[in-house]
Length: 142
Image 1 (cartoon, rainbow, N blue to C red):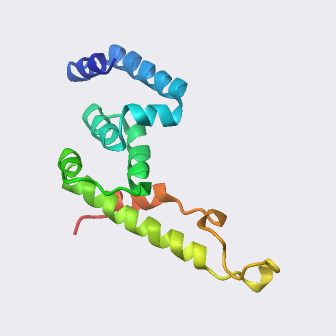
Image 2 (cartoon, rainbow, N blue to C red):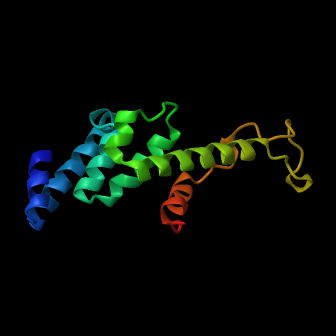
């Protein structure tokens, strides 16, 4: 299916491209996020999204890479390029700092008594990783 999608994109066969993309999206939904992620790594998804201009795959790939405990390898960095690698590094750093600051923020007196003076985990106040990535990607070049 990816080959058909590639050819349709290359030769600007809009109808065939749309159909191939809808089949890939249906397979993605049918497989579920875990199985689909197993088919293509976040790096693969970012490369494919860029190559085939599929915007809806870009943000989830960035988010998965930012949340990953694993570092991006040199080979992966070469695949996605320096700018995307920098976006991931900056977003990952900001995301982790914001998660830590949310987790350690003291509770105000108006919130009532709590068993712990600090938020026990970042999940109490989720950090919007997509906004962090958009801010970095859309930041003016200096």
